[in-house]
Image 1 (cartoon, rainbow, N blue to C red):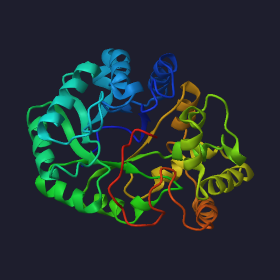
Image 2 (cartoon, helix red, strand yellow; image 1 turned 90 degrees about the vertical axis):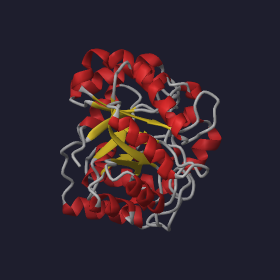
Image 3 (cartoon, one colour; image 1 turned 30 degrees about the vertical axis):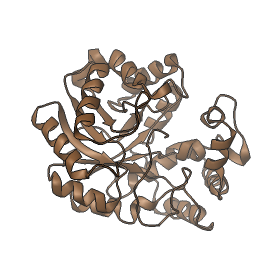
Image 4 (tube, helix red, strand yellow; image 1 turned 60 degrees about the horizontal axis):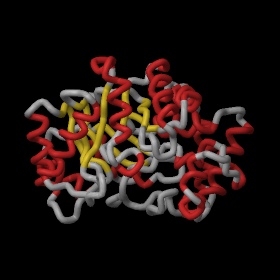
Length: 326
């Protein structure tokens, strides 16, 4: 299918959680200035999982609604309620998102997380109805394993979009998920392309700048993200980029965008500078030699868990947890 958005998407999972409101608003403005017109969010994004990220997007983008592409998700934990993919909850979640985003429709709406208690066919039936009613332009799923995704596509052949994790430290999607999406002409949005910031170089050699995302996550989560060799692999990548006089964040994003089947990268940002830096990755050509060097430094270590504790690359894809951490 033809994805309605661009190749670089501004992710908003950090809005009011790791970024304050002013920096979140400034990031949106910078995105528009850079030509980024696609925005990814969810009802669970923002402090306390109460839709604050959607509210900020709605307030800033309402005057630009016809010029932007809004992607949001439902079915995760929200405002103290457990995750649920029941059809009534999906409809309720979408209506709440529309209200917070100040729009009559969303361009892309995704089931956020799989629900083992609800057949995916039932959820897809609800999404089919929302598309038919004109409330959603493109429907899809995030974080489904290949088997559940196949069931979802059978239930809703018109499904158009899949979102999952892909970065240099977590490449499991390359094994089965990306080939499947290519075979079914499904748009693939890669989230966490910078591996929680490990691939930006800012955390090199164990550094943890005050106020950074890992700093705000707290020591336990930060240690988990760095564990299992992820920090060493990220350091080797940053060293290669330094020798090449290349910006590591831009290289990591360009690598993701170069993967066959990847439609767009969903990258968060703490403020305008990061937005502008990420935007420069679109169109960046790595070249065969540089790409081979990158593969060499990130695959020369033993298999390791992804920064979010998932299976090591290139293990088969699997059902995933919440996507609210970019």
